[in-house]
Picture 1 (cartoon, rainbow, N blue to C red):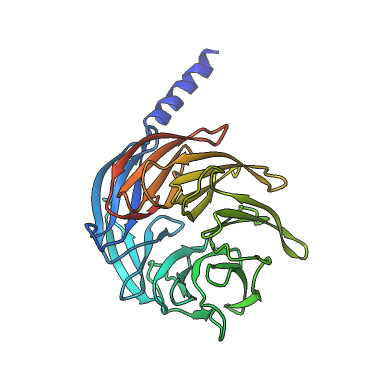
Picture 2: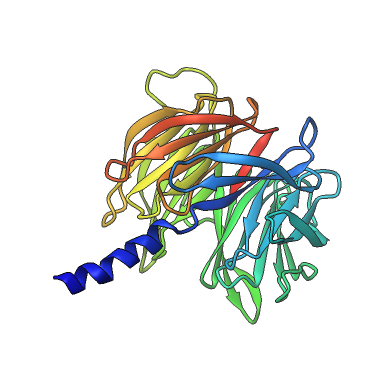
Length: 354
């Protein structure tokens, strides 16, 4: 017994002395007080944000993504230049520009990186198209290898809003065409597999989506419809299995959904409501994929554009664009429900990235 205690004590000592701080990057709109991408220190034990600092001055970095090794940050420029930029993380957490490339479409609003870290995809909202880039080992971007346009003659304008890689597939949500496209990789090019993985009726406006780690389920948040469409992969393709409102039954005002994320253990699903100004919390059946709403939590701010869950899975941070603040919540690990802790000022925050 004495031998076991001798071994245990130094192990606990090392654990308790571990680094509890991480870095949060904040993408913003720079048409007001903001100057670019900001950074905060984040305490993963207490949820405290501190030491706000301008990480780099850049124009309208409204969406951010990082490389899998956390050495590089990629940001869209949703301004006149319509570009994507690559930045290197410096030792102090500030950013250094590596290079920029044209997004080949107006108002780029989303960027994501594949798991290998060698490809990026940018969605151009007003352009109605998306561009794919290869990434060099030093984090720099090559010129776009493909730009694919969803606009068609005599059809309503396309509005590509987000895209994500899953293995060799690429899924693209188009709010204007009310479709989630699927592309497959062949001979180093992406080719259209399906114009829409499911038939989306009406005009709900699919905006963002979240894919489970095993790729069996996709959850689509609808900007106009105030809803989440749940989709399951089958041997024949995809099928809709569920459709749920994100807003409270008593709310009668204008609402536009924005972001969606699964919890780290995939037992819960979260979506942001701009207008009702809440995070909708859903309990998820990990076997069937069905979801059930269990909470609408006030974001303690106005117009929650984007939110993120910290790497420990214990905290949620919400970017409230119009009220210029970031709200921090503790996540109850058993119930998935949110508890408001505090908020901190930030200029026009629209994207949060750990």
